[in-house]
Length: 608
Ligand SMILES: Nc1ncnc2c1ncn2[C@@H]1O[C@H](COP(=O)(O)OP(=O)(O)OP(=O)(O)O)[C@@H](O)[C@H]1O
Ligand SMILES: [Mg+2]
Image 1 (cartoon, helix red, strand yellow):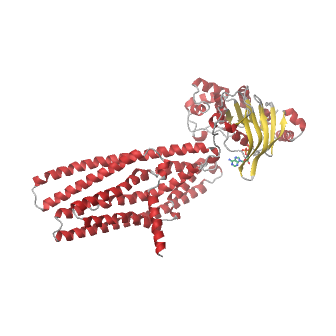
Image 2: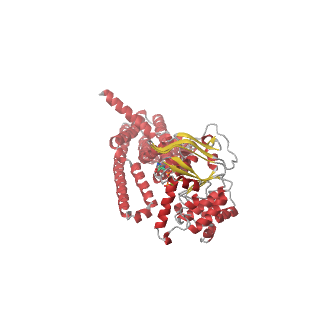
Image 3: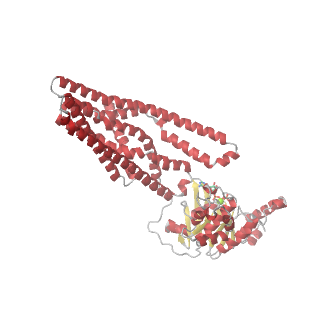
């Protein structure tokens, strides 16, 4: 029994220490120590001047009661005014520096987490809801503001001020009254910890509910068009309402606990303060204390508890932030799937390098292999088209060239050197990609084009846009190249986005060109023009083009057919047709489909 009480109080003590002081914040955020020190020093100074001021007030009241002349009390009044002004300045400095600490913390954590997310790459972010990650970085970090700005500096004041007052009361007044006041100070954080430990539980996770609501909300906004199309917006609104209600209920329950804890925080110090007052009144009637002594206890006694009470309020607000800290820690503990080589080779000025896949096996999830011992080569300067049914793994080949994922087996070579021996950024510099999904940032068209080459001049941008047959369209926009694209490029059609992507690839001017269905969203007329631009772009480069349109496929030097995670056939259009394999079946199926569709519906020029 005694042992269990002992272990309970040990766990309460360790819970209290861990809850009060969370070291993780210092490993996540850097450079805050100085401003935290200033906040603490300003807080100490403010408390010291406050104590001095109240000491003078007690002297003034005692003087008035003892019938001292007003002129004799004038220096006391002057001192009070001076200390009052100094205290105001110290308070202002404390608040400014607390805000500065919070700003430093937010900046430091946000940039570190974002840098880490960049290192984790798409392998991590594509499996997480972007709304959830955004909520952690924005609101989660915001909720730590109170903890670093006020709570941690307040912890130091909780020890320093009562200790200093204890010495002052013992020296100037009486040791017993100092002991009575001091003994109740540690009881405040203990009663806070005990009440939270008894009433707080898993169901009261405000951060989890908030996180849940905000990520659902963000996704509902992103998918608004789809929801409207499927007439599901009301259903989704109902779900949001439910989640908001759940958050509100959790919040109210947490608030009830806070008020309960706050009540304890009020009662415990008043017990100590009341006892000390009672004791000093008895001593006064016994003639052992003067009126100054009673005044000192009356006015300065509450300051013993001032900071532990403030701590309880900051503590409650920090519980929410500290849950966000758990999520941030989880992100930071995540290890990147792909790592840079320890002794990287330097990649310089490759000219149309060859690409080789040697026995490459890869799976996103265990037990579901996408590539199985896949081997092929694209020779230097060659244009190779890759065809295959949907989901066979064509785009995965491109992702693996970029090293977004780790191979399970095999090697990928760029000019006979395994790509994992090059620094990641230098490797990715070698590729220009026009992908299936072009992501446009909420920015001007010009800045979206500059992603291809941040240093490009206006003339170079326009030349690239002209080559991609998008210049005339851009020029017709109200603000030309400075027109905003709308989030995710919502103001652009699929074909327009694709042409922007082609212009980006032209601007990047990398030695290897990777095209993932580059003309799929473009009408036949534009396709011919863009094909001409792509033909120029493909010249003197190594090109891997994934395509479904025969017109694109037939332009290639060679065609590779991917099936069942491997390259099953390779050759020219004619060779593969006469071989009568998968490619021949694919072509005849597409021809049949075309001849069955009415003439005016046929995508002109798609098939030759
Ligand atoms: N990030 C991912 N996580 C898990 N599975 C994935 C991921 N990306 C793709 N896959 C799966 O891997 C397989 C190959 O996908 P991939 O995108 O390479 O196909 P594809 O040949 O490009 O198809 P399409 O012609 O439709 O573009 C598919 O079954 C797909 O569901
Ligand atoms: Mg694909």
